[in-house]
Each structure stands twice: as C-alpha cells, then as structure tokens.
Image (cartoon, rainbow, N blue to C red; front, side):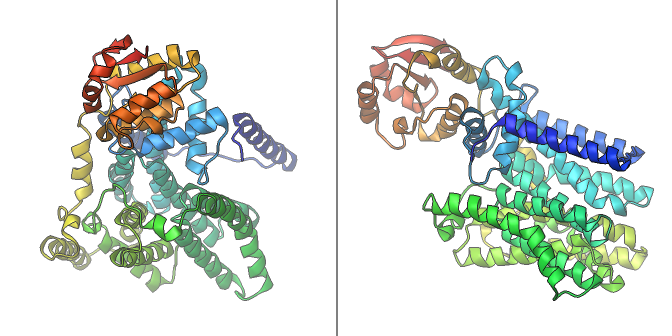
Length: 524
C-alpha cells in the first residue's frame, strides 16, 4: 500500500461533498450550539497545553524527548511523504504525515519539518484534554461539578498524556484518545442517542483505527466493545438471533480482515516476528504500580456501585471494569515473564483516562452527606498508607504515595535539551548544500550514548547509516568502509567521544563546514 496525500485529499473532499449534497437533498442540516462551558474548556486546554509544551520544547520547538522513539515515528512519517511507504500500524504515521505535509510549502529546509512533528505532538496533547471532556460533559449538571470537571481536564493532561509526550510515544497518545472517543460513541449507541445506521460504520472505523494505531490494545478494546454491543442488543431484543450475527458482521468483519492483513501478516508474518517474543521485549517507560490512582479509585468504585444499584449501566463503567481485568492479566503475564514491564505498563495510559473520567459521574449522581465524604477520605488514606508501607511489588515500582506522575513529569520539563541549534545547523547544511551533490550517503558518526542523534539524523535526511554505526563496528572498520564505498563527506560532533577516536584520520581531511557543536569533512 502506498501513501499519496493527493488521494487522501480527494477522498476527504468527496466525503465532505457527498455529506453536503445529501443534507441539501433531504433538507436537514446540522446545528451547532456554542455554550459558555465550551469556550471555557477550550481556553483551559489551550493554556495548559501551551504551558506544558513551552516548558518541554521552548518557544523554538527544540527536540527534548526522553527517548529516541519519536525519531523513529518521525522517520515513518517522512518515509510516507518521500517514498509513499506505509508501515503496518499506519494510523499514527499517516496522521503525522498529513499534518507535516501542510508545512512543506512554507519550510525552506526540510530538516526543519521536525518542528511540525513536535507541533503535532502538542496538538495531540491538547486533543487529549478534549477527549476527557466529552466523556464527562454529560454528567456536569451543576456549577461546582463543572468546576471540578475543568480541574480534572487540566489534571488529566498533566499526567499520563504529558508523560506520553515526554517519552515521544506518539502512537500511544493517539490510541488512548481513539479509545476515549470510541467509548463516547459506544455510550451514545448504548443509550440510543444515534441511529444504528450511523453507529455501525462509525464503530467499525474506530475498532479498525485502534488496531492500526496500536494493535496491542485491540484484543481488549474489541472484546469490551463487543460486550457493550451485545448488552445493547440483549436489552432491546433477543441476543441469540440472526440480527445479532448481522450486527457483529457489519461492525467487525472489515476491521478483522484489515487487521489480519496489516497487523498480523504485514508485521508478524512478513518480518518473521514471533508474537510472544515481541510482547516480552523491554523498553523505557514510566513505571507506577497504583499510587497515581489512589485519589480516583474510591470514586470509580462508587460510580460502579451507583450503576449497579440503579441498573443504569454505561459504556464507561463497562470499559473500566474490562480494562482493569486486562491490567490484572497483563501483570500476571509480566510476573510469569511472558509480557515485558514495558508493554504491561502501557495499559496504564488508558486506565488514567478511564479512572479520571469516572470521578465526575460519582460526584454528579450521588447525594452527598458527611458519612459518604468520610468514607471516601478514609479509603484514600488507607490506600495511600498501604502503598507507602507495604511492599506491594518490586522495589523499582515504589513511588510517592500520591500522584507520583506529576513530580516525575515536571522533573523532566526543565532539563538540558536533546539538541542545540548548532547541532541542527550541521544537518541543515548537509541537506541544503551536500545531499544533492553526491550519490552516496553522508554518515554522521556518533557514539552509542548519542544513538538518538543518529536516529534523528536519519529521519531528517532520509538516510540509512547503520553500516557506519560505532556500536556495530569499530573505528578501523568504519574508516575502511568510508574508503571502500568512496564516501565523500562525513560529520562529527566535537563533544562526542567518537570524535576523539577519529582525530588522526580527520587531520588529513578537509573541513567544509563548522559550528561550535561539530563539523562536516570532505574526505580526500
């Protein structure tokens, strides 16, 4: 499958045109109401998102991620733009590519498109605030509840969504937001607020989108979603019927076929990847067992209790129960060395959304008295005491007794940037002045400690310089390879330890461009 922005544009235009034509023919039009709380929450989201983005990336949108993962995601997006190459889990890379493409006409040097990628991350952070809001809006029936809801929007954004942006898990943040919007539509479908004719294709597209965005979550999301759909069918009629088969085929058939094709065949089969090996692979991720959720868990339990007592089930309550079971299963797999800590704790990013979203229903639907208030406060104190005193899990999971996520996130917001402008200037010079003058790649040699810079370089320039990586080959091998392949130019950072190893070799080469951070050499 090839990516073509023109095809996407034409498809989007045709869908919009068909919608307008249909509305005109049936004389029915959408009506929009702008409420005061919409304006308020918009400014809350923009202010919180802008502040966090400024603290992380500065006004210049500097590269300042904790991990090197975003360089890979940026590379996937640029490969789609430059070569039309589509990865197996293509939802995030497609969205990134479409967003970045808007800036190509106004960017003089395409190296600077990394700023568009960072901007897309910031937009996703703000979008996460909108997602939590649409889940809780229906329960905000009083001013005090509205105030608490706005506070929760800011708290939500500063927690796991900000952590997601710090690590650069671009696809993960998108998938969490997708799941949030899916729950919103499942809620409306369950409550008969939208017609089945409209709901079926929407739900089908969302289930497919979750799979193409992050397939690890798709089994749990599909099972929970199917359960909610089955509950709706059973409530309104007979579950074991031909109609049920038709409904499930309508919603899940196409997503199943495409998921098997793009996620299973194109990724696991074509690449020879074993599923159990993949889910057991480790990586860097924020780890917190339960302390971040202590303030919210009593409200979650109370909200579920209200749903059971009133027999007013909601998609949100079904989802948090199902996702909690998924987390328990993930930990059992982790303890038995089947699933890695990295993949296990990724499920917490969704749990954060669900737990905070459940606070408002419990506050809105309960008649509060001093007994209930005392019970909530006492349960929070007990849970906090347990996590602080009792060694629940491995020592590395021990965190602050309450809301450790915020202290962790803000400890990273003011650290040294990944890149300074002088380093990026070296990349810009290569792209603007050297890349088109040679048929060979232009290696930029770094030490293993700076491998992230290599990934960003490859993403910005479209190169694959793995055969010149210092962590795969020693200095003499790389120098010989530079000669054998008749490489014309090579780059180094002065502060990188690899530069010292090549000083004798570089003393015989011609320096063509230099900044305080490094230099580009012409090999003679």
